[in-house]
Image 1: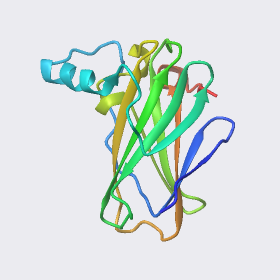
Image 2: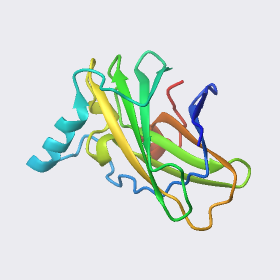
Image 3: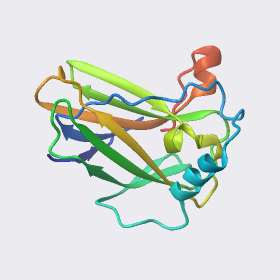
Image 4: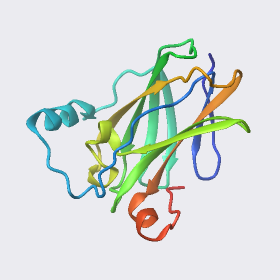
Length: 176
């Protein structure tokens, strides 16, 4: 499997062959209404890093002046229908993002099928609006590949969108 970066104007595409996504998203209405258990706080602490770790694929993809995707790891290749691929992304926080922002991640077989899922970072526990300048946030998504996914190339689109603006007024605000 090959992974390549493409740079559309509003998103970053991680091109993949025969991947699919079925990941649960966070369903809570607002990132500001979170009460965490000690275990959840520990999970966040384990995924907020002071320095970049070793990673399979380095990158320098900027989302405006706010967040930079500095790299990613992929486990579970080659991808197979009915299997799982884990995608771990490493984001550097260059400036805080104010508001109720989420990570979007869409898996698609171009022109055939799209499986979107949007989520707050770190398994739904650490919303983008809570990220602090200088942090490296590790966000892992387990991608379940459906049995009926089309054969051939697929891509994963990654970016950030303002969930608050969308949920209140269907405004489609994204970091460029």
